[in-house]
Image (cartoon, rainbow, N blue to C red; front, side, top):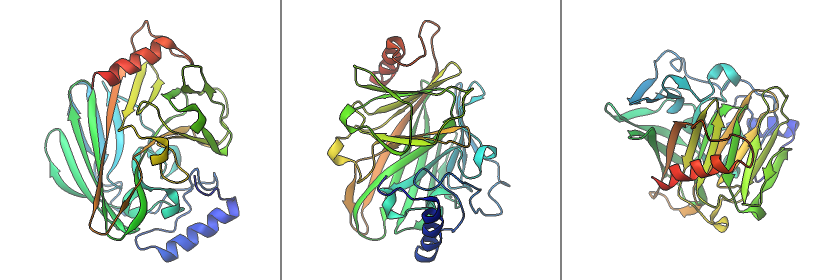
Length: 322
């Protein structure tokens, strides 16, 4: 993260951002780049009055709330939901989207991208496409498609309405902080950019973040350059994989990583974050980017713990089959 704010600075930045940016709401929501004190984001009256759109294919289902930032609010396999819900911590739930680097908007998130209503542009039994309003000089489009094999594809489009010297796509997905997150990374790119994080790095170049459900977690955030283009999370016998186009370290947005993990020290959630390569955009240009989601049961003979070779092999098998 380009700048780490103190608690007092976080409040000041929120006020200034609300005054300076069109479409940016001035709530007290906080994230890894600001202080841990958090509250619900401002929202439209209709945000929780409209039932989410349900996309189902086989045992996999995804719930999407167009009225709340086009946000993915449920990811379930055979009825078992993986994502955190809004009762967990106000605005910090489900899967959302921001512009990267964070220095483009500081804090709070741009409401037009994160929590304001999106307009449905296309819909059928297995696909939902939406368009968000303008905010911070860009419009965001999202399209969620259910595929075969417990898989979905989430496409994002950033439409530039001003010139950007540097911009990247950023997907943020919140899950319970009681599982095991892991990803192959370039080890010399791993940085702790906020608080502290009790992660492990093995000789195979894999980053492991085990989370003990019985312990009180400390707030922390780490960033890294993924070496294989995927990030995984195992919990309750399920494996969730986010697979995205691999990028080189020099392509990462300034102060960011294409893999980022933020662990709340107050609420029981972990953010699984992936980003695209950064690039310049001129007004009228677009950045298209997509992430493949997989959610599947972990076989009984696969061991789930830091450094597990069988778990790593199982995850790599799923990625290679795409």
